[in-house]
Amino acid sequence: MAHENGDHLVVFTTSYPFSKVVESFLDRELPHLSPVFDTITLVPRLYPPPGERLDRPLPENISAETSIMYDAQKESTAAYYLHLTLSSLASAEFYAEFRQNYRSMLHPAGMRKALGYLGIALEVRDWVARRVERGMLDPARTLLYTYWFDGTALGTALVKRDFPEIRCISRAHGYDLYAERYTPPYMPFEETRACSLDRIYPVSEHGKRYLSARYPSCASRFQVARIGTEDPGFLTPSSLNGVFRVVSCSHIIPIKRIDLLVRGLAEAGRMQPDREFEWVHIGGGALQAEMEAYADATLPGNVSHRFTGYLTNAAVLEHYRQSPVDIFINVSESEGVPVSIMEAESCGIPVVATAVGGTPEIVSDATGILLPENPAPWDIAKAVGRLAADPDGARAMRSACRENWERNYNANRNYSTFAGDLLTLLR
Image (cartoon, one colour):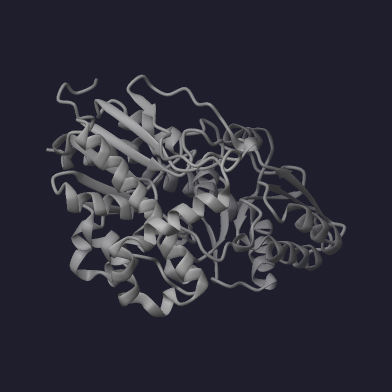
């Protein structure tokens, strides 16, 4: 039921609704936002590469606006980045940031990041200003929502300087929050973003504590809003034929440390030479061919493996429905709160994962085994061996996983709470 008062939500995304891969979580969130706002405008920034494109049907009060979208297939990347750089260098904001963080910005990566954040921010600011001037947005009835706590969030902070009555919020996940993930450990315009928006919603308690420690005077603006997954409507069976089945699901990129997982599983196979292990990795990425070759060369004969490449979310769930899985493993070096773990727990699959970011909020002794932040292959092997040797313990974990998902990561519950909270900001 839409409200007659013209409440307008503007959501800044990276590529949604045109990407299969990026921000697909919004598929679950929008049905909760759509009834609460009169109009929702999605404003993506980048057109996805050809293999990842998707034309999504959208509810009738939701539209996509492509005027600030950059299409790498059609436009020169160099020209695009030159445009962002020149607009940043012409802005007083750039020099204020440089005075404050010149050490980080003298590093080429820090400078590139600051210029990129500000270039995007100025595009967002100008987009909003044009629409307010043309009467297409009423500042008193508009809520700006950035899905990532990045240059788009900085853009909405700049909007608030020109139109103080407009409400602005951002989610904060992982890559857009933790400076330590980068060299130099620098997040551009961080204080402006953290302390100018009406509310920032980290997806984990860990994220909230992190921001609050950095900006204690603004801590009242930070509020946890967990994301979630749909109820799959089934529980994944465990193996009955003596094979111990392991699943991992992630992009195959360095931060996910698939090579470390291979070494851990090789160690598990050597520790229990009489047991058969089967490992399936769901997800593709730049290192896929290299990791497949590494697994071929490293895993002993009793550890079989298969890389599925990229699968749709529906296909991942179909795998969990059809095939027995005994444990889910994630050995990332950094995380927000992994959606892949939420999904595994919703199917009752015990989890072995590194204690990074928000992961300890979703994985406990009840639902699996937490590994150290930087585990040795032996640590992974020991965890796998422990669960393989204790089917009764694993059964108890399976029901605890499902309960933990129901309590904390059920999308319907989390997103309807979030939608209600956003509406109160316009009241």
